[in-house]
Image (tube, protein in one colour):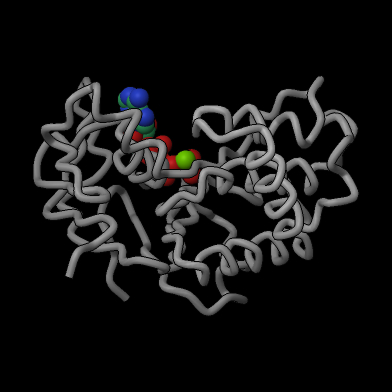
Length: 221
Ligand SMILES: Nc1ncnc2c1ncn2[C@@H]1O[C@H](COP(=O)(O)OP(=O)(O)OP(=O)(O)O)[C@@H](O)[C@H]1O
Ligand SMILES: [Mg+2]
């Protein structure tokens, strides 16, 4: 069995000795939807940053999409990251650009023709139910709409792994639920999705695998 990610006794210690993750052993499989929960400072963002190659394990082994993250060369990183989508809490959209332009910028690195990019953008806007906002500027969109553009951008390159850090942080419960349903739909299409959140009420409402961190350790329930 090849895993999308395989953590074996992974420990992450930041400079000045802060222990952010401690002996984490777990696997993520293809098409799986997982919540990553835990209080502030538990290590959720650190966990995602290790998957994205922004940080490296201090100890233990980590493989992501077949890459050995302990010995990843810097020239391999862009190739790995092309296969990973990321949704940040603060969206990071270009406010003076339209929905289509925000998505097109992300797609340009894929070396597709203009027609192919437009075809893809249309298909993705259907998935996130934003066809009607294609030509709106990001700054004209509501928080939930911006969040869906951010998700659309993250999935535009057809990633094998999607990382979302508090993707519903500022959204109301109904919209949070819809965003989660959207992320579940993306997982059912074969993308491995991992969602860091401390919105326990939402996690409770949705049946899914949950990895719970406390002070850098995975708690098995
Ligand atoms: N770049 C860094 N340098 C040093 N320490 C860090 C760094 N980033 C995070 N930490 C520390 O590592 C621990 C885990 O942080 P992390 O950001 O992973 O937590 P989190 O679960 O995402 O928290 P939150 O819910 O507040 O976002 C914390 O003690 C934090 O202070
Ligand atoms: Mg965090």
